[in-house]
Length: 79
Image (cartoon, rainbow, N blue to C red; front, side, top):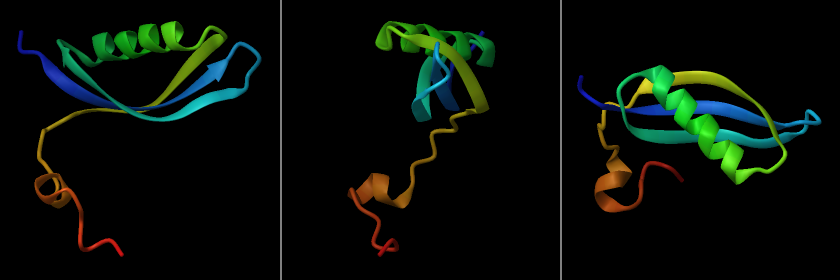
C-alpha cells in the first residue's frame, strides 16, 4: 500500500474542556486517513499532559502542490 501525506484540521481540548490548540498539521507517510488521525492523537497526548479529546474538522490528502510563496519564500500578492 502506498503511503500518503495528510493535512488534518483539528481542535484539541483539555480534560476540563478548555481549547489547548486549534490548528492544522501535516502528517506524513501514513497508509490511511485513520492511521494519520491516530498518529496525530498520539502526538497530542505526548505534547499536552492534560489532553482530553481531539475533534477533527477535516482530513485531506496532501497533493504536494507548492504555492507561489513556496518557490520564492514570500507571496507578493498578499499585501
